[in-house]
Length: 76
Image 1 (cartoon, rainbow, N blue to C red):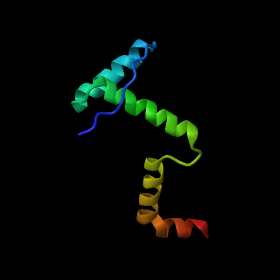
Image 2 (cartoon, rainbow, N blue to C red):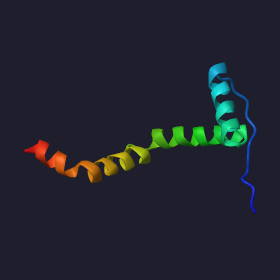
Image 3 (cartoon, rainbow, N blue to C red):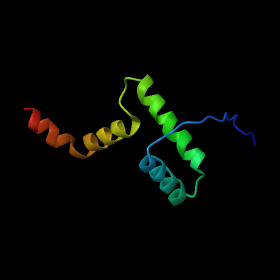
Image 4 (tube, rainbow, N blue to C red):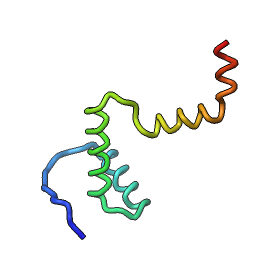
């Protein structure tokens, strides 16, 4: 098992943001730093790409599967 390289840093955040992150970590049984890392990676991904987010596209595809006939009728 390999361990990812980590670098310590210091920053500040609004108390409600930190509280929310801690609650998420606790409810998922994860470490705070793992949740923070995931949040930062998600932010970076959204900033660096112009494509729609995966969950948005998945919902769109699901909607097309479910309501394809309705959409075709509405397009007429």
